[in-house]
Image (cartoon, rainbow over all chains, first blue to last red; front, side, top):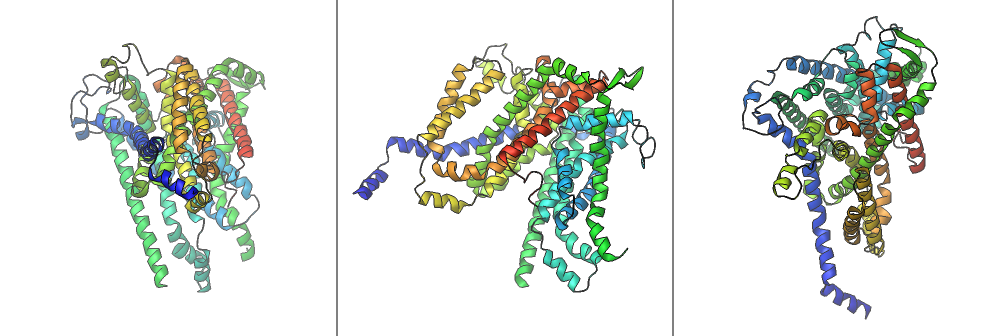
Length: 298
Length: 334
């Protein structure tokens, strides 16, 4: 009886259930489309306005399509220097922070030692401190301390590209540690043991076995560090003194009106990042399928 | 040195350079900031250490409205990012199918664009006769003097936008891990639609969120709350199933925890959105700190406010971690 009744209901759904069904079916896709459009809209506006030919100084209303700015992307006083500084800081800070962070991650994942809880806390704290506080505390250090042991005089004060570099390495280390650590979890330790059993020294084992295995994680961490560094405004503003980077240039220009070239460089950075992330994803996928193939033949 | 000894030292040697950098340029500056906050003086005549503890009381009482506003905007942006991000992360994790990677890419795409340029794009979009308001005004749906730019609404919208990926990604990671077989098992065990619970909870959540938004934006909350409640009820009735309430939601709590922290912390200290999209009455504590350091050079007060912000957040995070109880955040799981 009950089954028959249920079958009858299932056979002829009420209008309520039909309404429910179509809501269930359509609402999430429509919603997702809306939110992703919301996420992408400002990026699209930035790219669109790089092709603008504004009448006045401010690039706030789209007037006329033009590729003038693309033909001369650095053609503004101070812009080339700012972009150059940004690139120097980002490359330098990425290399140093990735190296230091990878060492910490290796230590945390591979060894059991006293003080690892404290180490984890020290890695976590900079990520849970607002940027304005990170910059502010470094600024108080730079203006109030003339001499520190091991640190040559003139490094911390006056503020310069060196102090920006110090700040960027500092805030990048934690992100590198977290990214590399995620990759090291589930690391096939037996491969290292096998290498050592076959007579490889620890040094050789590291470069021939460990490093190739963690390389994708290190590359991902480096990309993250680079993108955080090249985009940082808040900490840089507080530690830069007279030196200008690309985000500082944007901020300074925003009161007078942003030149179209800024949108061009923003678009170039966006495209480069998309390309790099795409390439690394492909490379990691190939790497993964290669590992898989080797595991199958082994 | 013999090998076993070296082996015992190895972890510390690996840690030394990186942790040294953090001790020297994160911990030591924080201490130094505390010291500077107790100084008295000014930039031209120099500073002396006077152990001026009164500055903390003075700072809190003078800048109380800014502190409250930061907490309100940051908290509201976090709630909104959660409300926007959870369904998005859910859809990508469970219904993404072939589009999963494309959708994930769209979520992180804003990261590849400069934070300042994104916020400035919102300035273009929300401008008085811009992309959003222009058409509505010419259609006569809004009065000519209605504006979004330079209002608290624009600031909260900007913060929500800028930190939405920080909320969505941890939620996605948590939801992605949910074992689909558990949901099948729940359905086999007669977990069906969640009624009337879904209707009630949906209505309540919808009404409360919308009322909060209207209160902070200083709009009369009554009508918006009713509309939010009705919408929430419809969504709750048809979309919230028993399996979701009993299986998916509890399993996604670590993502909720991580996402809300990753959103709230930068949101509460942010000053770019308030500066570019707000007005003088919508400034946050970050604006005060930045101006005190760079424009007014009142280092002791700036340091004191900055120290208060840091201490408040660290205490808040530790309490929150204790309440929601997860060790994953500080890496305790390894």
